[in-house]
Image (cartoon, rainbow, N blue to C red; front, side):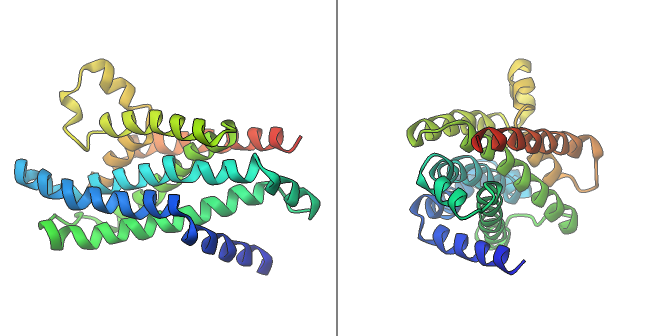
Length: 237
């Protein structure tokens, strides 16, 4: 247990020095919040009721999809994997530690948005904070699980970034955070339901627990964990 906690500590230090993680988990989401938060609330005053949720969905989705995969490629497509094997370290540990570290960073970023939005833009605090943070915790986990698949499947850093962006853009545009999802064509609305961001936004804006909005996230998470397990076995060969 001590070695595991020490591994988390080391991964945390590496992430603090990582420019990619700093940019994707903090700088870009908070800059987007500072600019778009003012625009949203000026153009659509009612946006302040869901500003925390929409900015958080953007930040978590970006931090997970664009920030995590490069770290996994660095571990499993380089000499680091050989070091793991040479020292008898299970290969899954790299995936676990990077996910835990990214999870902590994304949760911190989300808390910053939660505190800053009411102060900066008079945003409405979620009616049920306990449900909001529980939904946030699940949404972060699901987003990281999808990002983990990208990092394990794609072996090249440049291609990883391209695939991440290809998934990130429709995740945001079709999630409902930019404009009501009801305004989208039915085909785009259906496609949007494939992405965790859509369901994450729904569950975080719910004032009461609704199983039909949470269930898709749980299903995606379970499937993604199974896929990651299969991919890790292939990496180990």
